[in-house]
Length: 302
Length: 241
Image 1 (cartoon, rainbow over the protein chains, first blue to last red):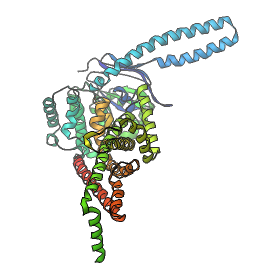
Image 2: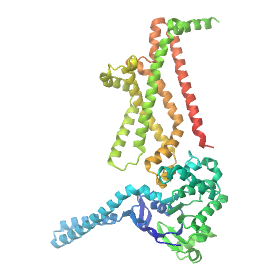
Image 3: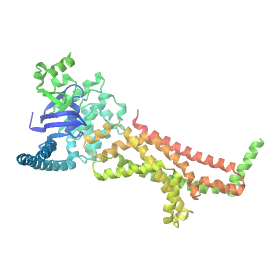
């Protein structure tokens, strides 16, 4: 069931000003993987997820999606190194030592050519992405904590808007598909209702359907049950579990340890912007190795 | 009792006698033309400028346009409308003095008024719309973008409809202000509703009654606008229950 890598993330970093939210995160997601990402609040889980469909632009690192670069920025490091070397060169020139000057110059020139080559390549990737960014996002469905349904549109319009507007389907096809998906989650009678008349659980299930209507290759869930009343968590998790069984590739940021244990095939623990531990669920929960994870699990499982 | 008969006699003299009401009607027509024209012109300017202000500024052209728009809003909001009218009158009118559309007397003056009040209202409209857009949850834009919709489609299909809805009361506030603001058009010799007072006074030697009549007409106009606002609001609240 598990296939080839679909997303490869390497050394991904994200800074908000001086605050480093993600520090060199690497992860390979294979087709059919259901990955649960857990960790304390503010550890960068959501930011990581949002970087994958480029709702946030990472500061450095690379993201490969279906063997194509969607983001690459390694040159920032070379640029930093370049400024250091430039300072050294200046200092050497003050010293009048011929050897030192030529050595510093050679160092500087070498890094400079490397930087120029890399920056050129990255610029090309960036240019490509500008054209294909929306296409990239069409292949990645996202479900938000706050549902973010469009309140001025009916449930049906919410679901069909994107596929029709982006010419993936005709109006009739999209409607048929939407009804089919709504039937699956038992909400076909709500097709013409406005989101404000629905419960939180219903809203979130429809948000999932809205993302599915685009036929995505990967689904990202950003704490999908955190804003729900406890009694509604189950119905949303059920939909997600079914989706996982159908073989959808999913990355789920969650606080639902039950879901992580039962449904996911890999569990990741993030803390302070790094992946501290990654394992199969069984091993992950019964035999955690990282100290921080042990502490975290003892708190959430007790 | 005498008070009322006097009042009626006065009203008759200032409104009905010698078809005096036709003069009010002419003034009203000009006021309505100016107000409607300026409203539409202002709304168009407002929407365009707002789009530029809230669009992502990822290249130099957008940054430049944004700067221009900022200056526009600051200057227009920072100077009195009467002054703007004078300036426009002297700058624009020299070019179009002899234009005469649809056989309306002082077309040129009316055009100048529409342009001036439109430009003025556009600045306020920009800030109103921008406020409405900022009030829309950022998650709406993110949801649209995450589905693969472009910024502009998400903006037009998802953000703007919600922004307009929440901005409707303030927008109508601006329309109402605009209708009454057109009364300064008389300063540059445009015969609008307020200006009619002087004509009536000259003919009847009455000062107070024409003022009252004109005030009543403005009030009726504004009441009409309020009704339109109510209708639109009722229509837009479909999704809110």
